[in-house]
Amino acid sequence: SITCMLHPSVYASGTGNSGCNATTDYHPRGNAIAHSVVARIHLAAAPVLVRNDHDTDNTKTDNNTNFLVTVRNPVDRILSWYYFLHPAYPPVKKPHHRQGCPDYAKFFRCWNSIQALSDEGLLLRAKDTKTERREENAVDHTSSTTVKAAARCDTRLAWDMVVGKQQCWHNYFNYNVTYGPLLQQAARRDDDGQKQIIIYTLRTEHLEEDWNEINVLLGGSANNFHRVYKNDWKRRIQNNTRDDLNKQPNQQQHPQQQQQQQHFDQVSDPDTTRTLSELGRSNLCRALCEEIQIYKKMLRLAVNLHDQHRNASLDELLRTCPRETREVRTCPSYY
Image (cartoon, rainbow, N blue to C red; front, side, top):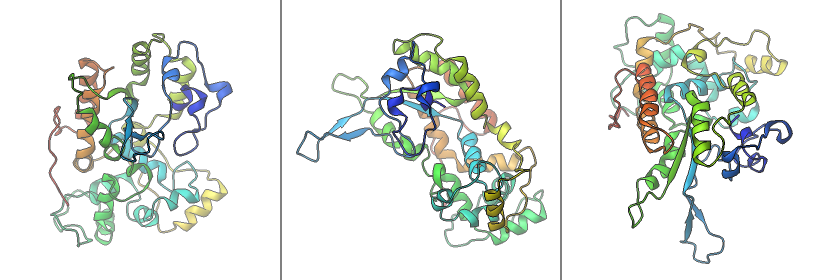
């Protein structure tokens, strides 16, 4: 949806089909952001350093200095990833979805609900890279079915999927991979003490507010976030924690999806409980600690965000992860 709000020249850039229509989607009037963005980066690291084709010395590079980035509560983001790839939920999974996720079948056979994944798959264990069984001191209030499933499944796989060590599409291209190099460069200053990198940040939860603020900073109109964009965004992107947990499996499946469901006949119907347990939420927050710290850094570095904006996003984060801090901290190592 954000891509479709930009100039049509960037629709085809980046990995994947943007699905934008230049005739119906692009509204140039007062849209300074659309006139400023020159490329879409998707499923790739932010291109901080770009090789200059005019230089014969391969060591010389040019710097990209201005970036428009999107951020989202990391827990919401991983929930969205889980449901997007789950074989029982839309969209219909195509061969490339599985090809980009080597342990796709194994993962969803073991952790067929977000509750099973967060309660048992992410149980805190001693640092041990060999064992593939959960610790014996399981939490008492977990269901016997889930405990049995966890006992025969690889909890290291569950952990590696969530933290992005195991490649499975957007989990791997997380904030560390995508924004890590950008943060390193953003921490540097030139000889005059000025920042070398300028970051404009769109928070998914506050898209309209942030878009308008950035548009003004770039010389555009104050209310550029057109109503059609807002309606389209609400229709397409409603994957916050609350809505992801309300998702239901397909009742009427496409024939292709029925075949895929038969292929995953070891996956039972997902548990559609509508809330994460306190344990599951805590486990997700623990596993995503590094992502959460990068999220805080991106909020801090955004030139378009004021203290009240940052505090609002941190308040939202702390409601999800009550044990998290407002400041960037060092995360413990669990594996």
